Image 1 (cartoon, rainbow, N blue to C red):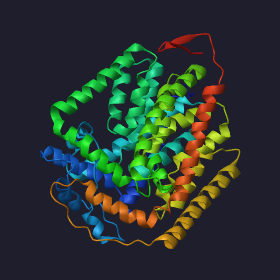
Image 2: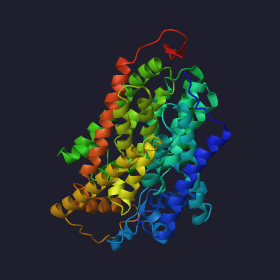
Image 3: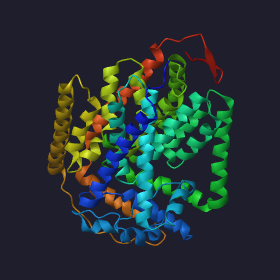
Image 4: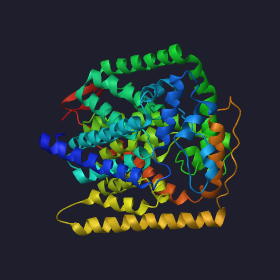
Length: 489
């Protein structure tokens, strides 16, 4: 099986360079035109948490973040002046905040340029690796899906979407290359987003070679030791206070895509919805490893173990926003390339790559949906490109119109005054107030957009099960995959 796309170094740099230019131009336009209230909102919160760590303060407390976030104008919603008093929390374990503690040593302007540039370059690198891994899929399709999945909802907010996508892609390819270094470096990078890292970490325990399995065990033990030794009290606070408070606050979030949010919409009690979400996540990881192992054996692609497990685990995660859906992309593209219902798989990739919830809340949303047509660039068939462009823009416009109608019929936005909480209060306290206000107005309005993503996720899950059941198993030229046979050709 040929996994390397033809083309030399020039072709690789041209492809990656084009994506870097496109994403950089979008970020520069957002920054200079001041058309986006949420630009770098999460990056500002990360920076402030890093500053708090550098100063020896608790980065989870409202009081530790308030001054810095107000200075950086972290949350300044034009239709809610009081929103500047809402503190954006950073629900990451202390060990995952260490990179932000280093960034916070720089002036914010330099830090945000470095952080954004790193994410843009990582996303372009991930796209190039995926382009070479899937020669049957067109380069415009892969590049467009990567840009759509990381830029509008991830890099725009300052999330590490590009870095995390690269780590998922490279961790899978490390299995194919039997790279001991890659098997420990890329899972370590994934630790920057722990709830995303759980699934790939678990899948690496079933890696094709023993060194990778031991490397992941050693990495997990090392991260745990560092967390306890250097930030034991913060780690304890994170587990016992921050995680429960953040889960409760985000259950009503109008942009949440996780199962607990869907159950809450259906009227399930909050504590029951959260418990069912956690249980479903654990079961999904187990099922994902079983399905991914079978597909890896059948398709002669050991990287499927990481990519499909990560896809299934991310879809079932108890906390899921649009910016985390980029982790679904490698597994989804793999399903596209396997040949089982390729058109359905392609449509599902569009469904998860286009950030419907984010685009419908932005003035330029239909324009970005229009850009999805670039994935269908074919010289012999320009009409296909125009058809996809028209459908995507019209569908996004329809979702926006439906959302505005539902918001108007159900509940208008009623901003409330935000009173500074006690010094010992978590940042989630004011964040929960902001979520509640936003949810009252928009929670039902975003359901149509979320249903599009949910439908695409269900299609991908079904295609993964189908691939595991019906792809033929080959018996010759095999390597060992944790005690089972994996074909290599």
